[in-house]
Length: 255
View 1 (cartoon, helix red, strand yellow):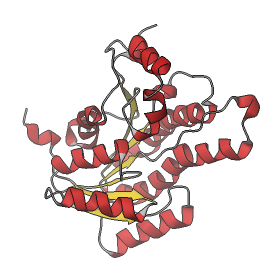
View 2: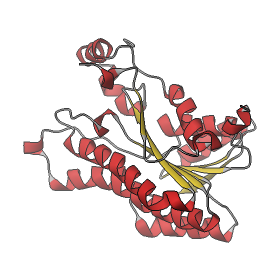
View 3: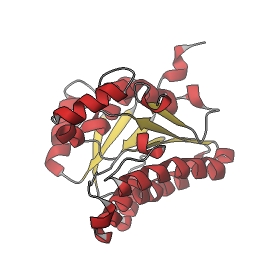
């Protein structure tokens, strides 16, 4: 078997929420595998910094500034891709937020904000990407789920529901688009060392719980998701569809 199966040379990948955190790790990993990457976010300065840092290492990188919850902005971004001849071969739906509050105290607006950012955005962006991919007869969509795609935890109900939805959205995408040559899969990260989890990593009690609950006895590192992402974005996974791969140090496998 040739390792060319895992090459992303000549492919263009759009990664949402990619100026930092897991998205940035995915962007750097796919670029190292040969892809041209398009960074996305809503903070122009962070995007520019990420682009400059990646370009300095000779990675092929551009940016696309739009809000993943704004349908008009999404359609405008894809129209611009069309106008410039930019074909999105790979989409990683990574953008997401967290909001912690018991359900009895949870406002509907906060619930909806998390659902819109973490789930509805993946549908809207996935739909626009797939419209183009179907016409070309190929494409890879990777949605970023979570341990909460499978298991619930108190105080994060909207996040749990959104990530459970990501798992089923992925299966729905495969059901509708596999015949047209698309593969839609998901990654379910465990507890990772990211900015979004900074409050948790600095909490001694929670830190001890994660390390005690995870068979690997540690938090995951963003770069440890890159191999899974490259596999799902490459020809190596051409007959893999509608699946979610948990990269979690074994947490979901044990009581």
